[in-house]
Length: 328
Image (cartoon, rainbow, N blue to C red; front, side):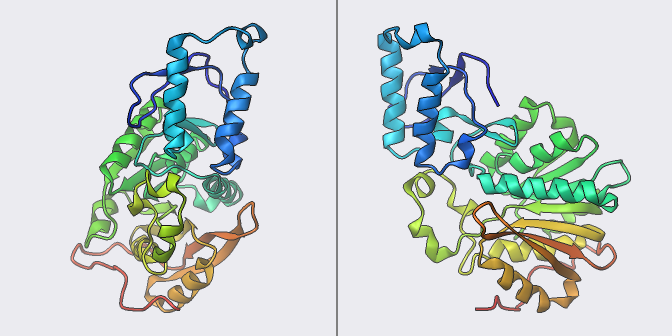
């Protein structure tokens, strides 16, 4: 999508003291490039978008200083999304700010899959005319707000344990004028009894999550753009990348309606691990019904369905992950 000319963005890095003024921006296809290619592609397209007369016009000292400061941020390996202060996701312009997790192109595919399933299966639509959706780990609000924008009758409960993420989701919801259909709740789903805070809004039609799923031993291999700026708690999924996934799956049966669905983004090694773990937990009444590959051909997304009645229960009966171990 294109933003209006004279879009103003604030780079947040040491030494950045001014606001940089840049011209019309087209983000839609830049998002499909890796982090090394995005800045160069953005620069080329930004230059090409200028009127010919401006291409020959000398830069002012203030503009030169802004460029130097923006370049300095990038040389410090700050992600271009943080430097610009916003990024495109599913056609929405979302504010970005460190250390909140930056939504990746794969997650757009997760949203598209959810939209496909809702369109094809009327049973996913709630009594209010659209699905009631719970997003676990909302970050910038990318998943929740894109679903709300494309499902006009839907409502979302978005939860995250990070204060910065909660604040950013609030801000993006107001920017997009979607604040009336989303309830944003600060909540750590790993805490005992957390599901009880959400039960009054249930039963849910869908649970959607892009949880922390990086294997702990892989964290040190992440690019500097990631490990130096983004919140590690939004990435590190524990020894097998399953810590938060197990909590989400244990939480969901207490909140989902009968035949309600869970859509997850996971590591390509997880489909087998999740399938085995669910078999070890028949009490959850959850079935792995489908695995979808991402645009690189990796098994990246899971569709899990509840096969029993709504599991609401007294507040002292926490269904957190039992001792069943993650298969090795």
